Image (tube, rainbow, N blue to C red):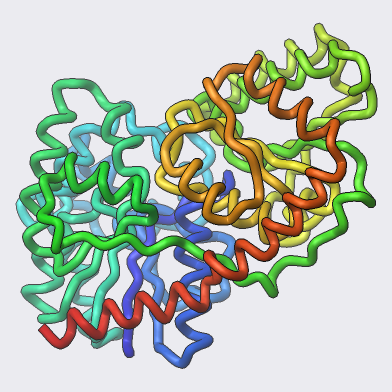
Length: 429
């Protein structure tokens, strides 16, 4: 099949689970002989620069932001657009707060969902023109429901089915000013009629979005995410130090401070003097003050020497992280639709310790490679960490279950085959 995957880029400044999800999925599709073109939106997918060097970034984050605020930019010559969409400027935008935070982007989100009736109509036409000339797809797969404003024009011009994944849209919308939330949910529900099928990344999140978007049951299906077990080289748990890992963007929403507070409590207990906290995942400009406060806390507790930050969270850096940690915890405050770091950790033979929120219980229980705790407080997390770190045999057993569970239930090649079956069924309608 000829497949187009439309992916919002993160700019490479932090660990983006959705970007990683799409990149791994595309690689698996290509491995099965399908032709797949990744089209980045807003920001580049820097980890895959060579893979998409011939594909322009559409809806460049700097350009559309300026056009939304200042109408004069909508009439600017093309060379201005090319400058604003240059990779250095987009990478700078990715490191700043505005491009990755929902707050302040409410009107932009509404405009994007309006599609051809929004202020980015020219960008939409350029995107569809390019797809029509270069792609000729059998199907178009949109990364998330915040991009539903694209669907009508794509179907109208290309006459192909449109599939849309669902993952953590609620996190973005619910962070916005209350006056906009209902309008955005209503727009997403309205634009859903232009999509052939929605794919939720967990049963939990399919139910959430079916309710929030008023989707009929037959228009939504759950398909888990996956990784390729061959991409990971597990190190036996018994050969590592007792190190706790954090793999995600270092921000308040992801509960980075909750893990640090739990670590501080743990270090005050006897028997955990050797335990270290190892951190990777990057951050944006919005997180700078937050991280400074956490560093001050670690300094006050004299724990700087017991923590390590691995700056490189791609490729080699991420492998070095997994080679060092014996368990991973990302205590996201409100849970998540899935959490790619769970699969990456368990595929590396590293058990996970997650709060009983969102899809975490569903994923961890199905795989068997971790434990669930509650409530999501530093005290409860500290107790869970202490219990697991004190039981080396349990850690070892969870590590083995994690490896087997990923191979059995979260293999990206199985996921890709299931998705192709979905594509084919939509093409037959």
